[in-house]
Image (cartoon, rainbow, N blue to C red; front, side):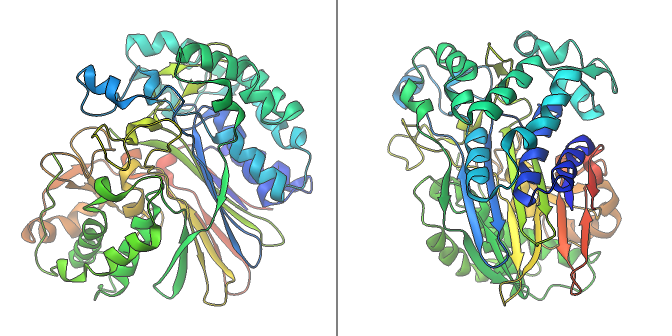
Length: 498
């Protein structure tokens, strides 16, 4: 089974399985395809995290990029910046880790030759694909400078269904198929990035692979063992909040406002200090231990205010499981929308802005510095039974809200709540007034009055909005049958099996 936010990408993953590939081949094929068709969500100019269940063990891959050798927080402060530039600034672009992630996954677990895995994505890029409604909507939100940078997509994605060809992305994918990571980082893309950076990056920055196999972070909650990526990922918030919530008297009916209230309070208790403690070298187990001691902060009857320290994220999540029950939980992102709204000039591949996670506070453990990875919102998840057998792979896009969206829910299509900051979807824990609770419209009738009575600051957004993520899941039933769900909020996504 393959689940993704674009049915063309899902088809690419199913093709890999039909050719005899495994879940890794399917995941790479799916990701490569959506990197072509969904540049507003992800792409080769972004980062990647993945969890792999090989049938008995869980493996974790951190393929998030590092700041270039020219990174200089003092220079940004001297210009008057108090936080990282959000758009139109190459200094928010860390070396993209996506392609290194594909290489690491394929080298360790892949079965099919890489050219065969990437073939569907190359075909989509060369021959074209129909623009999705979400792609067209994202293009319409670009400013004039961004439209000039991203002209290849802007000039073609004029309406849903219009054909979009991406010859630069096709050339980059062919180079990867022929030469692996060197075809990308030491090819046209790498040369263009160095030139665009004008001192931000060196040859060594692009020569050294970004992908690193790390020990997964895990905790027991709700009768399962939950796994995610350790810091610099914020995945520990999902685990910590889940562990807190599993100790609470949650109502059996998720329509009960107390159900939403308790989960909201668990998320707030887990995440209230994230800006201070999440960084590249943070110890995930210590962060989880600190969260475990916060049960007393949760009042079953009143909302606890969370003061800030002083738009929404765009990402794609996908999951795959093969006949041997190898499973992949993979998340890949540009950060916000088309990322930095900059494109590498040789290939036209848009560049993420993951550097917005860095701090500019002198001495902060997440301060921008050469070779550092920024704090990351990406939080793939995987659940196993107590005996270690696979239970489910699941994840979502959604910026800061990813751990909240993944807290217990009745179903992928069920109403959601998220904690949100005032502007970007990446300022939940840094906005001066603290986060407010955003409800999806079809959850308002059952939740709103009860949450307001408990003191929550409530906003409402339309049902099935991408603001509430694109969450996907595959669950392994007791009899071995797979059940998969694609989020209807993704509009053009699909779950497919064979």
